[in-house]
Image 1: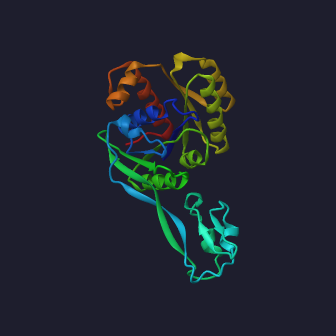
Image 2: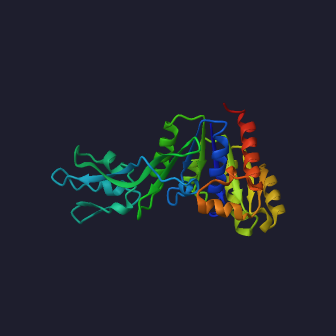
Image 3: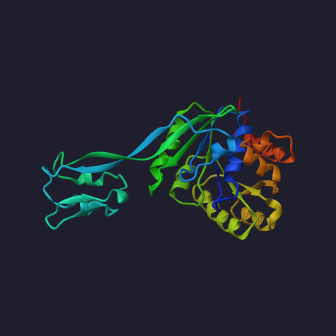
Length: 289
């Protein structure tokens, strides 16, 4: 089973909800938490752990053998990223930063061996054992790399390869292709928002995506006492989503960030909110162990 925590706008508290939910749900399920915000992964900080078991993620790049190349220009013509440029005589050159690793050039090349395989490292994935009874899988894009999709795919694949009953996915901000890939396959989408104009605007985008992907949707309102909650409820009703939890602005949650200790384990009112949310997830999924 898989559920996803997303929300459109950055900074709404997606990772806070995902981490605390994971800690609570690990009491009912054999769980894996996947931090698929590969450009800015931070779940390990909220859990107070250091990423471990690093694995490189590499991407294909063409390597030209000019002794075999016939200068036909087909590789440049098929390259949608315009990563291959040719001289007047047809000699191809690669601009690595533009290459998406699609292998189209290799496929259309009429001369066997004229285009060989080379690779570049685009980032890393990690599997970190947490003290809360579950593994955290995360991906981190290499500085300067522009394409995060291959890394999201590899991190999610690594998470799925681990023994689990429930995969909990924490997505990046926005509604781009990396977010939809992270959400793909989920039985439930939990959209985290804040009752501000920007939060409500971007939440509508993620709810549109969830409706397009035909999955049940819940809404969690973070910092619920700082804005117009009624607009969030109206938006949720518009898209057939249920508002299942309200989290107040809380100094306890801020302290939990600083200490790297999930607030769901503290004896404070905020912990009851996250445990209540976890209970609803257990009921929705039909229980655990």
